Image 1 (tube, rainbow, N blue to C red):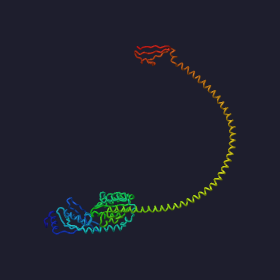
Image 2 (cartoon, one colour):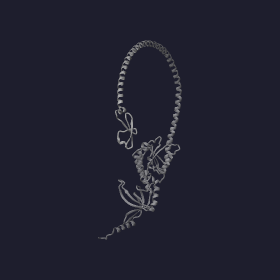
Image 3 (spheres, rainbow, N blue to C red):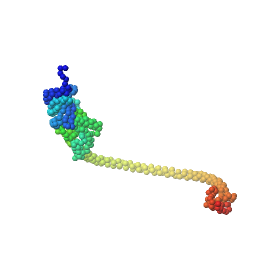
Image 4 (cartoon, rainbow, N blue to C red):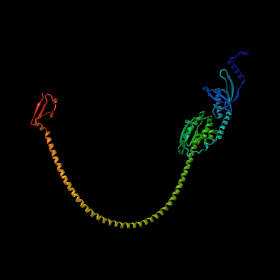
Length: 454
């Protein structure tokens, strides 16, 4: 062996010394793929570089921003770029290269150049806008007609947001007493989860699209850096093609976000959205008042015209009625005379017919009465015979009953030598009911005796 072997620690030490002596600070451009802030305030990152053709990662390095530096870099970056310092963005940072015997190679971030990221954001935003335009959806939502009376509103916002409370209060307590029907679809309105959260609520509203006139996306206050989610391609894509007009009141005064550009109407604040809806209702109310006046004017003209026409028709009708009445009176006079003559003729004919009927009925009555008298006499004789036979039968049955009664008379039985013994007035048929000392009475055909049981 030409050289004595060295340990891994010694080798890593040599690398550390070489890097420290030969590498100084560098301005580095890279994309943040991962970012974690430790409880102590240190920020740990992973930088990557991707192939522009296929988006494949071609370089990767760990990095650290120590707490005292991170406290200055983060607000400086977010204030300048108007977006959060988070993963997924491209940055230009000044770093030093460090090597540790145990943890290996890492980068120590010393400073940041936010204008580089601003340029990247602007390029990315412009690419999103061009893509939406090439797909033909950039102005699609703006082509929708907002409802004539837009009072059924689906609201996407955070329930606790001050902007939502202002919006709700302004609509429900509007001075014109317009009635609005508001349905809140709560969503996260800032940060990495905002895009998916808002899209989920749009999907829910789409399932009930016939219940609403418009969708309102509002938020109030907060840092400008929190608005980056509204430059999302997919969020803008969903809003651009939504079948209801989408109104935005995201609450910032600077350039419009991509979502603002594709929305039907972009307003600065939630209260501005409320004022816009109230103005729409006011316009509709004014139109209705104008239509009401027009209807009233037309109605008055029609009443006057019809009143004049009615008078003319009434005169003509009265004249025609008088002519008809005169004609009918003449006709009725003739009919009356004719009716009297016919009635007289009918009465004479009926009188003759009635006289004949009286004679006929008299003769028929006599014949009927004679026939009935003969029949009554026959029935009378038959009834008399039947009654006699009935009485004879009853007299026989009565005699038989009398004889039977005599035979069943107790005195008749006693007469034959029988007797009846009673105790306390009740007949005795069983000697077991008697006890010593009881007095019994014995009844004979003639007389009775009293006995005592011993």
